Image (cartoon, rainbow, N blue to C red; front, side, top):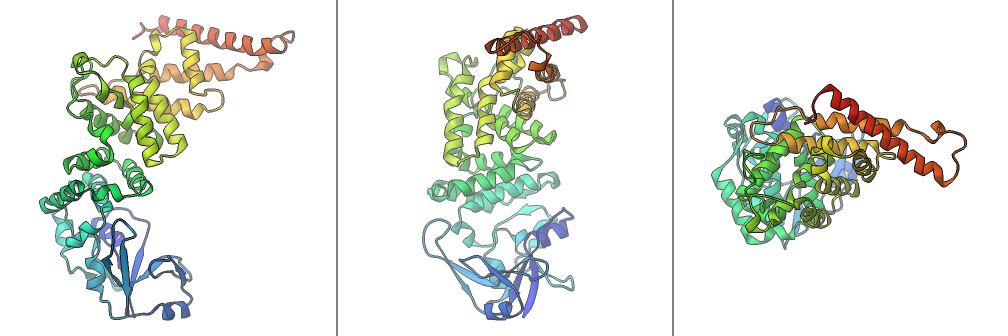
Length: 413
């Protein structure tokens, strides 16, 4: 029996990219042999085992045949006679189809090393088309390795295009689409993922609300980049650059979906786009079963981002109500995330990427101020329902004072 390190660990080891997970393939063994050595079985559909000490995954070499639609339409075949080459050919990309033995020798039957050197993402075989999720995986790898200058081979993009047109993508479960997308959003160049999906026609199928933004104009005096889709990806770039959380990145991705619904005769103005965005943001979240906390922030940013940009001109009471809607007293981290997303929107514009977003500090100062005012600070004679009323009054007064001081320091924006 021979054991090989396979897939991502080999690829990233050769590329010099950090990696954590190691997967192994075992050739020339039976499940019984591995169990006898103390390996623990996991995975119902095919024989995968955990190493008794390291708990890393060891899979028996296998071949697979597609037997139906979607992800579960596969039959696996394992046997001590299945070769390493047969196991590797069913993988998605040549750079993921390499193996390494414990002496450090690399087995590369499908020329993954060449593609790694020339920075090409290329499918291994026609079996690529059997799992439509691979369209998303390639887009995610394009985002992951954008920093090294990787590109997708023409024949692979063509295959992805065929898959997008075939209707196969609709067979993907929401969980799998969200899992790939959330992983892609956390890459340093998450915008590339959506760009690739758009290029092969998959964005239109899986994220029609985002796809609809491309080609929609905005007013050049505010948006020199003009196109709403380009603005969305530029804003996402800002969120990646600042290394914000998944929730912030997703909120930035969907903050302007309402602009695709602006009546044609009103373009390039987008009055009311915040309200119009609520329906498409909700649709995306519900369709992909996006986690509740992620959805809540996305809706808040969609609804309120203009209020954040206008923070300096808002009356103290209006600003207090905005903070209250963001749940300032119970969830300060939510206000911070909201402000971060709004900052990405402001900086995601051509030539304005480095302009300071002064509203951020103002909102965070206002948040700290209102949170510091406690019932215990009120005069002892204030009782019952009056306590709540007076707290609100004190908080609004404190914001007004903050605004007044700000006005003295520098003219409001």
